[in-house]
Image (tube, rainbow, N blue to C red; front, side, top):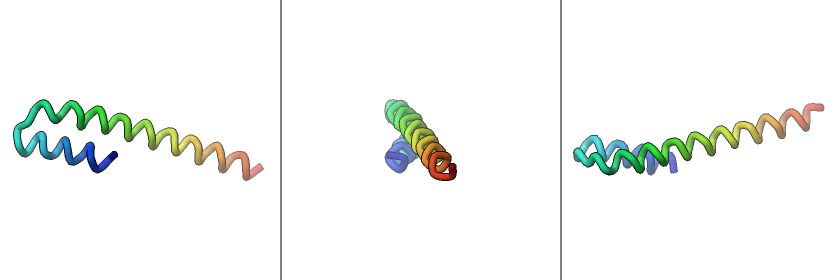
Length: 51
């Protein structure tokens, strides 16, 4: 997903396709949310197993 977001943003800039910028930005925020959830799960898992 992250690579698709960056590709969409890159193509939008290179080809001057303004409409492609919005899906790229939306995908970027979805990817960021997924990574935050992954990090939270990792921290929770580590905290539970270190006790």
